[in-house]
Image (cartoon, rainbow, N blue to C red; front, top):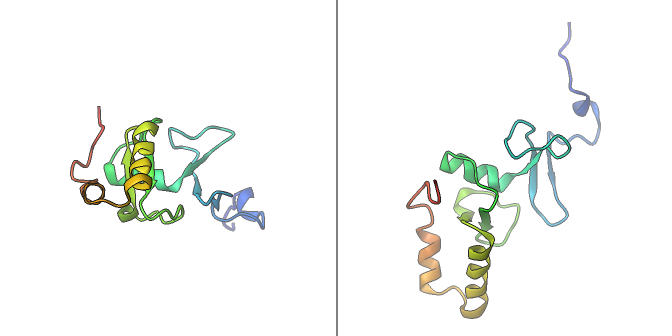
Length: 120
């Protein structure tokens, strides 16, 4: 007997469970992920990359930042995590106001020193 194919795979629009959103993020079909929902099984790839790196699932309030601003550049060297939206926005505000200062560059450089940051 031949290999069974998922109905999704037979659809000409199927792209291996991966697509890019209108605002530039890569989404991955991962229905068994704890944050996946029946009607929404796609998880942002950048969150999956950080989770794999940290060895744990991200909490809902944690936000992942793309250092170079390119939303589909999901290499770990381009990602950093913030404990919540407020901290992420504060980071952006400082960059807008002062530019890439030495303290901000140090924060980026040292972002993974405590690998399991924010872990309970």
